[in-house]
Length: 120
Image 1 (spheres, rainbow, N blue to C red):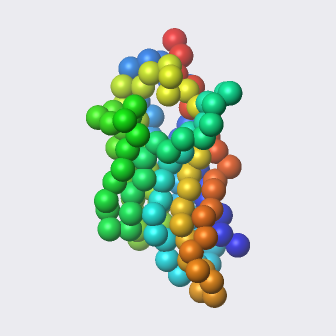
Image 2: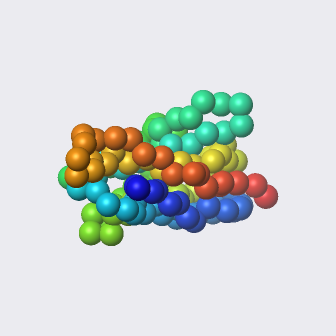
């Protein structure tokens, strides 16, 4: 059973920073792309940032220059460093990973989400 567990959300003032972590656990063969998505109330879920197993990254225009995604392949963990946070960054942040088990092709897995609230 593959699981993604996120941590690091919380309440922060505008201009502040938070670091999200997501670790994949269970029995599997490999992880391809890992990423962070977010969903604000009344809005659709959107991609925030993603990173391939080789380290190539992609960012939403709204977070470029403020957020940094990274991963530790040995720990099956992806991070999202969020700086200069704005109220519009308030959302539930979800971790996503493309994971291949030993007996099937790649499947997409989601974490349960962690709340990030930016408010004074």
